[in-house]
Image 1 (spheres, helix red, strand yellow):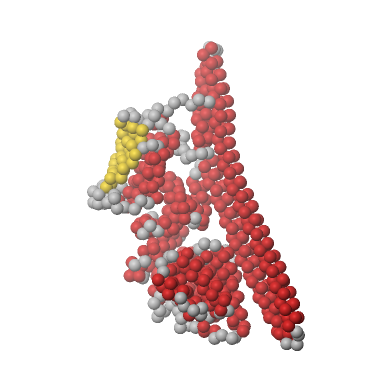
Image 2 (cartoon, rainbow, N blue to C red):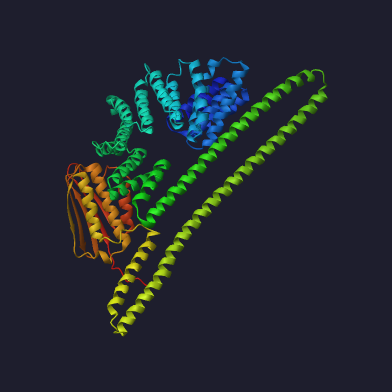
Length: 634
């Protein structure tokens, strides 16, 4: 703030604007984005006061960077304003292009990346080529941006299915980065991108070749664990696609361990869905479901829609009945929403381009008219000049009022669309609740009444059909139970009804331990009446066990796991012990897994403890009070 005070005392000049820009970039490096925005707005206002076109354009470009990850349309509009001014400078030829060509190239590249984000690949390619032309004019400053520009061209060409062009552009990116400080970075990026192009063509051997080239930069990757994990995951996935399972799933787990160690949640979401696909391919759907749900949860938190779509699609395949249908519906709804969002942004960008081009044409027309008027004004009286100025001011006010009215109308339309979406979501939730209540209170009640009637007939009649009626009574009981589970499943997760609970638990432990080559010991207290325990509590115990074992597999390096269910004083105690490396419980950062365990225990009014020391293994202790389950009343 002391520096800002000094700059504020400077007289209005281009130097003051430059200092505002320099100080804003300092704030950006400190991630203080609000002060970054405020300084550039001040720089823009001062630039306009001084009619400094170059500084106006640069201020718009820096403001575009502020909105880049916040509001795509605002970002695009600011960059487009900057581009418009730079184009006018090119046409006027009143300034040395070397004073602004570099900044103009960066603005064009940002516009290209925004267009690519909304899948307008043709526009992105055209803007990138214009950016390259600018950078080549001032190549002494643009060494880091030419490789980036060719990298973007390669990515766009891949999406346009011009695969050979994509490979050529990525090779140029590597070539332009040679003998610069970023040579190794672009060598790793370029080889990875070329591998991805070949993966899109299903040329898996070529893809592996380039992924291995990228992985050969071991010293660089040792300092860049995030990029290292990305390459390992890409190589593992292309191995999986080519049915080369020699290093699978070890490569996936190696990448996942690196991402866990640096808390790379974006990478974890991708890694988890790849593992889910792998386990689904070998018919281990219980493990596939676990990883798909992990990817879904992380993707929802980070709003990673591509991975979220994949998670919903896979869950719809591995889930049975209504649950599978629910995931399929979620996939369809999200996909439709993303398509609408992309179309909305694409339309907004097109409208901004149209309005900008229209304004440029209007400005050119006004400029021509002004030249004629200047000649005419020399021969006219001061009265006519005054009248003309008043007329022009009135016209400007009308245009401004029209633009303001149009903006207010657009905001009102957006608000109405948003309210409609909220109402649709509320209606969907109410309908789901109504279906649950109808099944439980209507259909289930009628079945119960029929069963009671048959019981009554059995008690009164002795006609030789008692055994047959008992058979149908048992069938009615099974139907009642199935409908009850469906009713509950509309509002909460449930376990399979055709498998005893403790068998499902033991199968989970056995499957996971076999996959990870870990010995296990499992004990269940026979005093626990699992049939009498609330289904939601059983689901929570099941999920807690899943989360705990997954933490052991990822972090503990254990050889043996011991799991006990004990029943003491109306309390179920779940204890999970491992002989792994342990951790300092008061230092470890809680991830999603531990938070999920704590949340589920809290839902059951229980207590959980994580006991561990480095080198001495870990114990997870869960205590949950249990009340006897009463007969349902219909």
